[in-house]
Length: 283
Image (tube, rainbow, N blue to C red; front, side, top):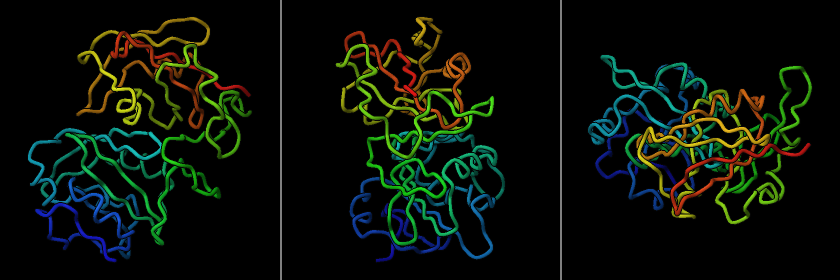
């Protein structure tokens, strides 16, 4: 079945290549404005045309997103992309979009389904040409078979040329992550570092599952490190995507690198998140 724009107000498909996706996607996304991106002849994923938002989509969204968007994928990683406007339309900044392309190892036959969830928040689902969906961190030469709530933990070389002690080798998710928790009843999620780690986004499924609440933006909070040190952080809300500023200092203090995975345990006061306890993985 051919996939079309899922918002009934966005039926002009002239700027999109029709592609093959599972029939269920047509029914599943009817309630949310969506569009697809796939390559045409002569294009690559870093072409400027791949960074543009469809004109009819922007028009229907009004001023829901003007300065930046947050792209989130099923394995709970997020990318903040700043926007720029020119006479041809609204674009994601080249550096930000290229990072998303590189981190997800996009192939020429891949199909991206963008669904506008809330203000600046977009869910991006990646499909291969046969309709198979990518549900975990893509690694070159590895199968993409992990389920939705399990974030993978690839191992990369650390700065000194060895293998990072914080990353588990292979393509499997963290084995029994609850064993790292100080309080097994606390909410938690696994975070695999990408190239940009300025803020720590809290996974949507964690927020929904534990009915979490957050203090107003710029409220002080703490990152609790394995050695007992506390680092300052601040709450942020990027268009409904709850996050904590100060994550870059945590990554530097713990010597974390791209590809390393940690378990983030959320400390609560009632249902409000007041601290993030960071757990490094065993070798």
